[in-house]
Image 1 (cartoon, one colour):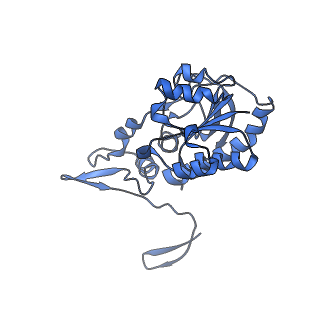
Image 2 (tube, helix red, strand yellow):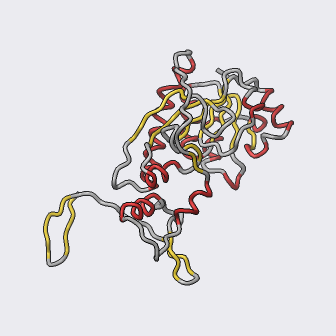
Image 3 (cartoon, helix red, strand yellow):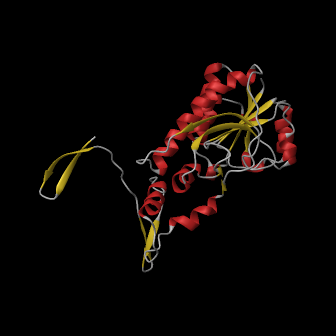
Length: 263
């Protein structure tokens, strides 16, 4: 199937590598501009496409770019952590639509930072492969899988789990799509959605506010994702950033007031 890949980040790179290993017919690539690009060169090298088949995702509204994509005659688009909204007329160019690999258990946590919100709001976490439509992560669901959020998870550890889960789900489902055996179910209209600016309402810790221990800890661990700054409180004019380390184990011995933990 003639495929256009729209990809960013490690997960996009892994999908690109897998396509190459399988010998899939990837006719074109859309990546982020340099200032927003992650693993962009690795993605390009994996597919090894000529420059005229590689497009800047921030320029997809330009008529000449749309014509360039259309000239490749793609049958299906595959979006992996692609950070630009696609217009209905662009999606309409693909006879078999555009599918999106999203690191959340839809309809929960549409939009950005699903790893954060599954911890903060206690919503289900997982991976979903779905069709794109006019909304944000609202299209029909092809396949999905849920994963547990553990008490020791941080924003970083959960994100890494979701990356691997997404990759496994895509590898399992793509062959079904190629052979017409994949399912398609309308997505529930309920659920949750977040935008990047929503982090602003949780990441500043008010030292004079009352929190439950659970709520405060959930914010701190959800925003622990080095090298990103994360949650903070103010000390005068300064911001003081907070990261947490979470361990599990058994207390093995006590020396004075100190305890040792065995994993």
